[in-house]
Length: 211
Image (cartoon, rainbow, N blue to C red):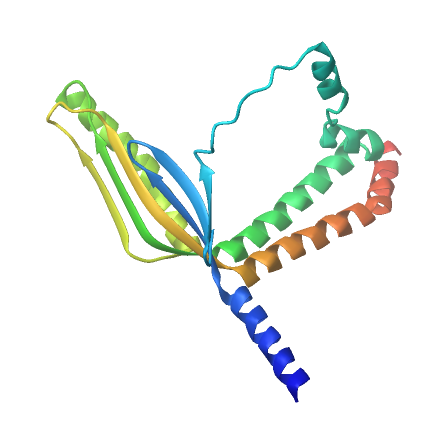
């Protein structure tokens, strides 16, 4: 009985961890800050703490050049042929877009606050800048709202004819349950392993192109 209770407690804890959300918060005003939070853990992604830069000698630079990895597309083209490499890259990109599309539909954004004040040296330049800002920003907001679940959306785009400076203020928090994030990572890893195992098929395509 005690073992059953322990097992149920562990399963309940795992379910709680998987259903908890990973939060990504971005704030852009005078400064730019970006941090991620999961339960009681908060990690600042930007700005990072300043690290002392170590001077690299000639030996350090040579070691860095030696450990430099080759271009994966070039290596793939040399091994399988250019056409097969392009086809494989397009296949990977298509699958990643589909997975990202499904992932974004699980993302919850609340709040989303955006303020852009467009200003120029005179009224004509201000109007021109304001029109360009609207043409660039509103389509992006439309795509964001169609792909993700956005709540508490506040977008204030306006011209500033008082002779001030253009300014941007942005603040939003994205929430994604850990279970969905892990599902995306594992699915992507499975796809990559499948693409690597599918190398003989690409070799067949290469041989057909040479013929």
